[in-house]
Length: 180
Image 1 (cartoon, rainbow, N blue to C red):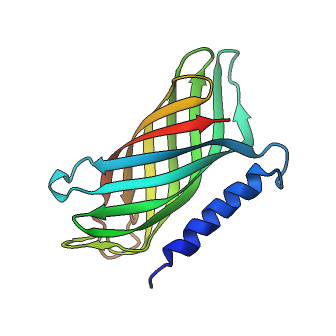
Image 2 (cartoon, helix red, strand yellow; image 1 turned 90 degrees about the vertical axis):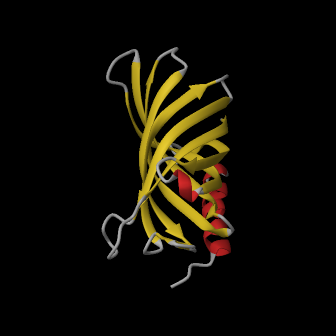
């Protein structure tokens, strides 16, 4: 089964615009928008690259274990391209992100998991086996200013054993975002 990349891209951005315009509860709102790029972390000879646009939406679930520390959740929506050596396909995901921060400290810990859809899962001799993947990540947000956030994350994408083979793909990822 092939997934139409345009349909998924428009669905992700339509959902983001709907929430940004306030058609959800008051606790939900657009947190940030940005661009992200990634490159192979462990399969360096396979030269995978990923480029996507993303948005994060605040959720009503957050916690302040103390006056100095905060745990907040957002939903990360992304749509873009994954490719290697001339083989390129759509990649789209949505999932929760947990951010751990300390008051007045510019670095935050960021981790999450997202169900991911691929329009192409065969990239030459590399076969990711099925179009459905799970992407997990862990990394750091660097608050450059009140409105600008840079991020580094290490992400792992695999089919979680749902297919006969599960090769997985690890990427180093960098992003820059405008924070609302």
